[in-house]
Amino acid sequence: SRQQIGEIAFAWGIVYALFNFPGGWVIDRLGLRWGLFATLGWWSVFTILTPFASTLSGWYILRGLMGAGEAPMWPINAKCANTWAAPSER
Image (cartoon, rainbow, N blue to C red; front, side, top):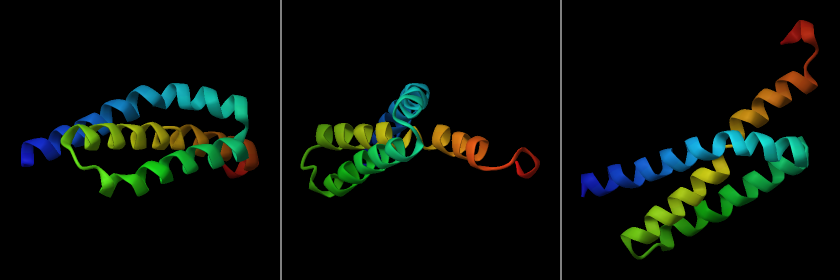
């Protein structure tokens, strides 16, 4: 139903918001290249598994885990711009 779709999207959004700051911390620890590899790998695995969710709770879990992998993308983008671009080009 539409309500269930909204609840699944809400679950993704909550997990995304919660993992945004810890994701930035992980990127600082792993470095940009390994952090990007790890988060994109995480996100890809759970994106691939999403169609195989056979229950509503499975959808909540898979979409939440997908949001956790996608959350560090903003910190990665910010750190890339800050690290790799010259100050005059930012």
